Image (cartoon, rainbow over all chains, first blue to last red; front, side, top):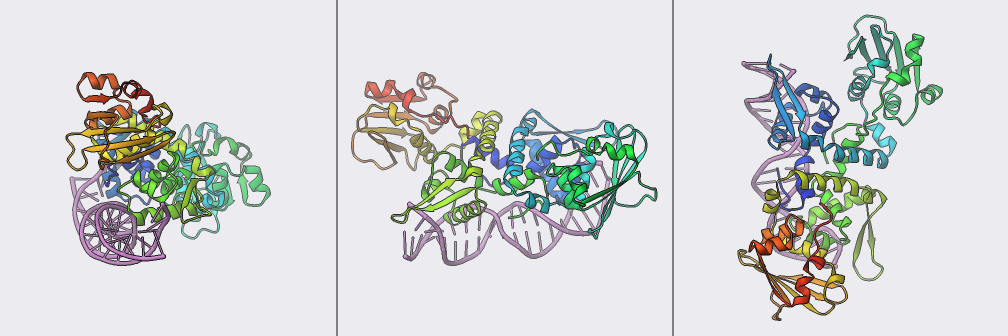
Length: 222
Length: 222
DNA sequence: CAGTATCCGATGCGATACTG
DNA sequence: CAGTATCGCATCGGATACTG
């Protein structure tokens, strides 16, 4: 951890918080992740060795709190008061990024895995029709994993997968990663994408009409 | 420049803005520096090669603007609109640092060179007695440069040096780097430091009594 | 689930000297 | 003042495999 050797509190905060990956960890905790592999879901390129090291560092600085659950081997990470206070910083960074990067550059960074993970965790289960649902996404242009499924079981179980479970979907989105990302990020709305043929949706009426309600967008502009 | 490969605007902003030294450059520009070697004064450990590279990067991203003055070889750096918008981020980082780092840790990072540079640029010339002034600082515990001078020439010329100009000072601060830093950062006030014998001041009355007016503290909590 | 263990390559970075 | 030019070390970091 190289240091600026400056007494400026901003410089000191930067050394710690802005070290590579640290803000990503904090973002994940702010978004509700609380254990090791969940954090990795939101940061797939984050190697476990390095994540482990960074978590220790943040714990040592009392920015996060590590807690073993009394039963089993599970570990729970949470934000301390100073950790929660990083929200303002992260939020301002997100605002700046959303304002000053070209939409095309942001969209260009999208990929199915992260998009689907983010869609899944932003799905508003209370707004879905309250029955078992299979929500399918077809990205015909994708080679590795063109098909994804979000599995909903009331009241709030939501799972994500890219392996066919062999059941018919209740709703199918036929679209591109780019178009779905635009919807998710709030750059385009649902109607626009349908009308421009960037998205096609098939399925039961009640779930289709409620799409804008349950398909969560990132309010949190990180 | 390694990337997170995430479409999250916060992650993208972080890659660029939070890369080592970039926020320091932006801080300096926010504080009024506008050329190469002035920036280095506020970041003495920043190698010129690396500074040059970073300036180019920030210029390429249109966060700063580089301009050759029409006469001579001087170059002027300024913040663009998006650059100015980084103020919120830097400010939040500074707030966080000032709130969550122990005062002792912040003070422990202080050193004469940066402290004096920051004092000099925060000196409020309009509040000084309007005559030529030599303001001397003695840090008896410092080995390399125990004595510093701020030279004021009305109305607004303020220079800093650590080489004796051979003239008597109008005011002399006998103190430690730590104590002066505490005053500068607003952790302690002038009266307290005098009473605890952490600071002694000799000189003309008018300049002494107006110390709290002209000895600038860092309002800007970076 | 929650991490460790390795391993090696890239390059970031600091220090210093030098130029126009 | 405004940068270039070197240069080699250190370490950061990514990928992958493996364990309790």
